[in-house]
Length: 436
Image (cartoon, rainbow, N blue to C red; front, side):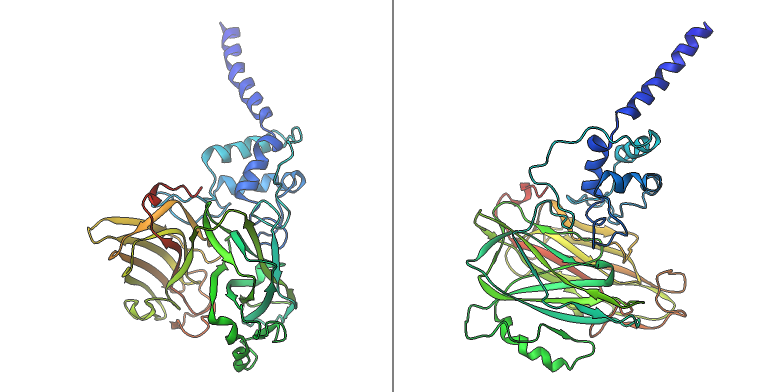
């Protein structure tokens, strides 16, 4: 009987060992890294090192096992029980277990995977080379003096023809320098307007702001407005959705540089991915709260006294036709503690949008819904945010805490309460349209 008992013990042990041996980098780990990690862990992005190759991953295998087991990485701050998003980065229990078993089995590489028809490049998260890259003509040199700076880059373009945009991605040689970036694509069909011989950039922090007046002739027709925040990747659209890149125009790229401790150089721009499929439904962007619609209706007025925790809310009614939402982009700064947004219809129904119970300024995202979200005419958008301006907040930039306002350029040490939406007019059946 004791031999039978020993044999029974060895069977599950051997099966577990065999299971671990079957897990390889090529077959099991590489897909996880590509889907959940490489978007930030690539050259020039927000991650401190790359995770694009077997060598990248294997030399940090124990560390990866530890931070994934604790769910510290990959960062994903939205509550998936409130709303589950299509671009969710958090790992499943099975993915975490797979990584741990692979590390414990001494990181087998496995056979070389078949060639990908659209192999990801080392510096883009989208998965294929861009069709057009537009970047600032000059490198901006950031002084390591601990000051924040706002720089507007003028990027002119003249194309053979207009193009249908399927995706767009902000890029920079060093995203760790950047608090956020916004880009406005302006159509300038008038050949009498000079798009080339004005200043390549304007330093809004240190230059005379009247210099910006030379850019105003470009702003008559804005085709699209987008941006980037730490943790975000790219913006893509379903078939038949998107926007049209004009033949001639200017991109005004505004970058808010965080304080730097040492001198740095920055070069940034956007990558555009085109499709031959006509854009039948054009997407738009709208901003609510600080710097947007309803800024003055934030209740109570948006002021954070020192040594307090405080809740603010905003309600905005949809006065126009029914809309469909693709993405939402919540934004607060260092004092943010909790962010919630939802919609109530005239009939009393509630549609959840996003809930971030533990806000972390270091890890933000443009959240893409799994299906389009319908917003009916007369429905009300609710934004509810909590801020912690006490010494107990480890991210509080002031010691001791100071009174905080939202004003002007809204530096990192000021505050924001903002929700941006990427949307388009509703059509019947939008609720069933998958955005995966």
